[in-house]
Image (cartoon, rainbow, N blue to C red):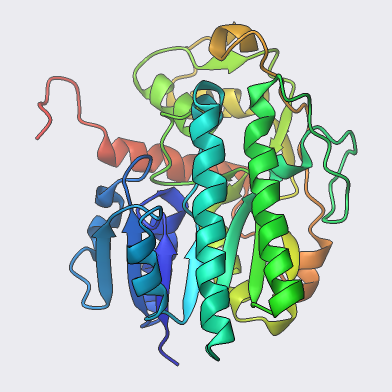
Length: 336
């Protein structure tokens, strides 16, 4: 059945891939994006698609959101502050962008629910909500362990946790159909390194003949999931009634150290490159704290939708390198 889908942040990295996937299923898709971290160029492959409506606007525009929600069957709420670098630099913007618009969006959806029309919402959350929980593998019922409020680093995870509390309250009190997924290091084509995202940052440096810069000692571990696997899971979760009212880890559960990731990148691009190291205080600020290990327990999502990532780290790195080769002007060429 054809559905009317609204994607906030739909010109961003994940949002643009989700837009393409929903259009491929013949749905009507409206994208709202203020291009603060997204880019309309990310939608170039579907820019002329008859089922796509693109609106350059902000989700803080209450009149716009109220109008769009009345014409929507499903909302995919991806708009948020992104990237460690941006969070460390602008904690106030992080908090304001994550909480206020989400609360208004949920309130508007609850109004539609009260009027007799259910609009299901997918809320994109993050592994950052676990904070610095010391467990080796995190499941959805684990405690959230944040650092002190004097460390701006934790404002992002705390604000996204508030988003989750708000969405779950709407489900518990008003039965608004909500699906919440916590993303773990989603990577792939179109992801920008401008806000601290590690894989595109490494690839862009190596392609420019520069040493990739590793923060701290590089022994911290992460699990990288390809955006295609994540988008497929998002759509499947929204089509799964048992996922409503649930918080679900989404990503890969295969950890790799940042040092291993950097070595994989330079091995594929230029094995003669060296690596550089810098402290967190040099990269961000003197109060910055990081999470040493971040691994999700995927039992819940595997049970709900039989989720199995299809991209290993090698193919993920290849896809990012190929994207940047195709979209980086060669030396001596001029930008259009």
